[in-house]
Figure (cartoon, rainbow, N blue to C red):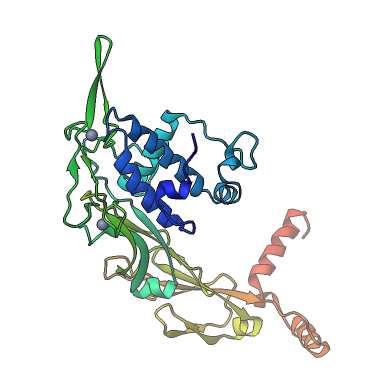
Length: 381
Ligand SMILES: [Zn+2]
Ligand SMILES: [Zn+2]
């Protein structure tokens, strides 16, 4: 029997794009589906033909081979001999994946979870959005603009998936129950209705705008209030801001995962801020002062008394981070590190050597006491 041209089978032009192919295929597959034409051998053959044509043309390589060699491309030993087994059961399941995966499951394949008593009302997926903010932003809090690509209910069909003016029809195979009974010998076996995939209804006239899924992708902009004092790793849940549900199912949630960028000057521990400040030997010995920035954007003056040692901490009360949902404030700690002079000139060396000759144990009591203990340890006097 001479095979019909695949393009003619689908009723499309030879330069039809993927979308055109898919639309044509869906329409015909719905029309010639064996469950809609029980006992009709012509319909079954037609259905197989449509499926084979679509399987070939949707694959760019097979399509190229077909365009070049025609049906010969797929005959034994042909250039693109991927072959069609003609196994009806397998092409049936492909069709169901395709129709129900795309139509009913919103492009989600292989997920059987939505089939059941919910009647196809599937909860929308939760979304995750990662956001990085600065320590200053965590201090002040901010209103952040979040742009999320998400699935929203199609306005054209109000999320039903059926073309406006048409309605999903009650599935005639299962009378809307979503399950069918079949006799097997003495037993009666109940299984998910193959026609409607358990939903109890059929969309015979899918909405053009959303292809029958009842949803479409849109980038949404949300204003999110980030409270002052938020910690690194905080998760904010925005209830109902996730993906739209399927056919009236509940909406998912949006989770905002916040991370606070490391700061070049400050380390944060809870509500407290630590700032390590290296000071010169002379500032440490003679005393002095310096300005440090604060996390609120201001600055504060720190006075260093004479004889300040490395590791000394100065506490600036209330200059830390706000405590989340509270009027309390943490503190800021200035940690001083004395920097030993390096790269000395000859003159500096002379001055330090002279300084040493006029120094006594009183100038470095800690060091003097320590070496006295070492002498005792070795039994000296
Ligand atoms: Zn729609
Ligand atoms: Zn059914």
